[in-house]
Image (cartoon, rainbow, N blue to C red; front, side, top):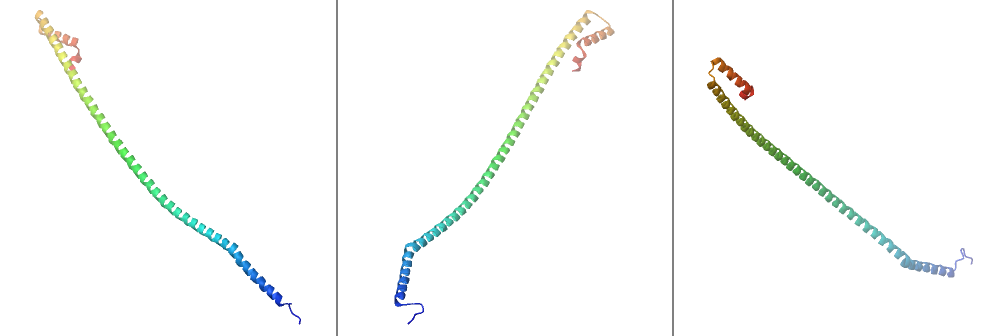
Length: 171
């Protein structure tokens, strides 16, 4: 009998043994190589997933911190503006106080100057009165010593007034 592919029981047994051997080799390779490789890939995938989750949480935390710090910065800016406006208000009040003090001092100086001017005017008035009294006594002495007529007496008064000057009588 002639066979088409020349198959015999030995070839079928060898093929079956080879298939079993390949299957066991596949199982052994799967257990020794594929499973550790799968485990390594799964571990790496899990590690990457955890790192992405950690990165996402860190980003959210950074975003919340950023908002918190921006809020704090706004608060600090508001406080700085309040401090500056308070300083401006105090400076303005201080300026107004200084101006009021200067005006009061100027008023006191003017009052003191007026008082001194009045005292000086009183001194001058007293001095003029003394001079008038001195002139009157001189005139009386001259009148007594010389009996003169009315025209001479008027001339004597005019001469005396000219000696004293016009400024004495004007003030």
